[in-house]
Figure (spheres, rainbow, N blue to C red):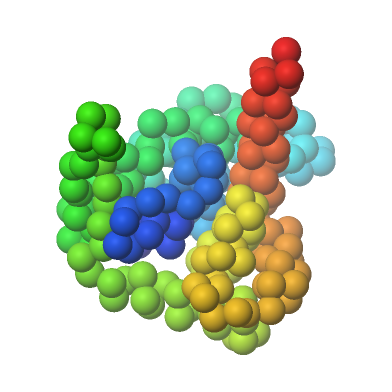
Length: 217
């Protein structure tokens, strides 16, 4: 399962299909960037290279992925010599959320249900029909976030991504009254370990600043 699928699975209510968080497109974009990073397909530039430091660049000699969504994401990333990571997050997440939900439906993890709000406005709900993949994800996330288990790169990156959008505590808590302060502290550690999570956080901050400026102007 891609991180792009995992973040939506964990932030969508099993019964109602309601999503948590304000910017699912950025969350998916950050997760796709993390998927590319973990696959060794993108990296950040360093001081002394031809491009400025801390830019997202593709790894030219890396073999191309076979997953169609990663192929598409890598094609976007390779379209420019370098990106600011937060800009690439936004680009990768553009019009991607429903594509990820469709993948989860094709895998028979979620089910697509059409619904009308007040009997008038059509909406789509994504309802869980196979809870096992999410259960396994949550168990792995608990090991990394709550119990100090051996670092699992994918799940550690997942924790950092959720922290970047302020959803790690509610995703982990699930009514269990966990120590929110400890979860946030662990989340900050994970966020700083993975530059795509930092890029996601900055993309969210930029979106929020733009929205605030538009509202006040």
